[in-house]
Image (cartoon, rainbow, N blue to C red):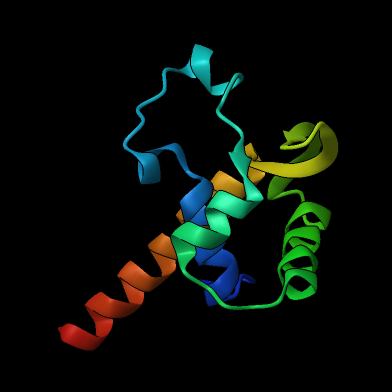
Length: 114
């Protein structure tokens, strides 16, 4: 069994993007319309204190690998201003990477504890 090419930080971010992390069960039809998650809410939920440049660098790497898809959305701010916010969702390739990670560490854990 090959060691997954995913870091613990990447796994944590991607697992938060999985619908099950939010208590959502999706049918195959709904998976195409999977909910997008605000980057700010993800950072808050993960309770990480990393800098914004570090956060976006991590997210960009996940997007480059095809594990996460990101988009900009328009966000109104008080006082009549507008800014762009970033939202993310897990891709099929990302779901597969999470499953491989889980399978490897389940296998590894069984070997150690047997």
